[in-house]
Amino acid sequence: MSTVHERIDGRLRDFVSAQPVFFVATAPDGPDGHVNVSPKGYPDTFTVLDEHTVAYLDLEGSGVETIAHLRQNERITLMFCAFSGPPNIVRLYGHGRVVTPQDPGFGDLLARFGPHPGVRTVIVVDVERIADSCGYSVPEMTLERDRDVLDRLAGTEGSRKRRTARMNAERRSIDDIPALRPGETDPVSLHSATGPPTACR
Image (cartoon, rainbow, N blue to C red):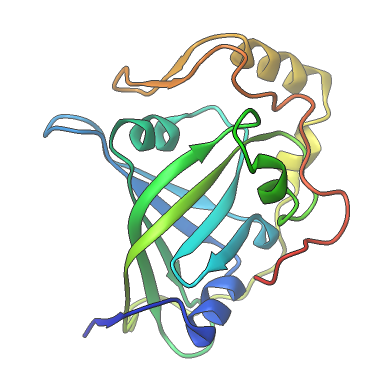
């Protein structure tokens, strides 16, 4: 049975911050577009900004579905599952916005995350509904390690060329929804904080 919470209190904050992976779901307008679900790893790429606001670091990838959908309708849901300890699922429903390097406050947001290359944007979510449920069927699993492949590839010549090409082109979703304009981001040279994150997760 689902329980709805008024805010992201200390217990919920601790839970979502402790999960090594979370999932992001968005969808375009209308009945025909593709619903997108993306897994997000690296525990220092998510932060709780306040009791009704969270953010995560958007690292460069081949797809732009989340960005396209948010710029079209802002709808987003984040899901966190307990793969160890007591079973639990927390969903954060809300409206998201894409913060680019040109936007006010981008630098302050960037400083809240751990060090990663290939930064594209920061996604900020204004959370309107907070609900947890049992998660009784979610398997118990042990985390072996974080994959560092994305970070390592960011510095290779081939990856830099691909990112430069994507950065200099208009990027659209698989449903042809506009996502990023040419030159709007700089994942080739933009890194997040080089020291420890400044925010509690």
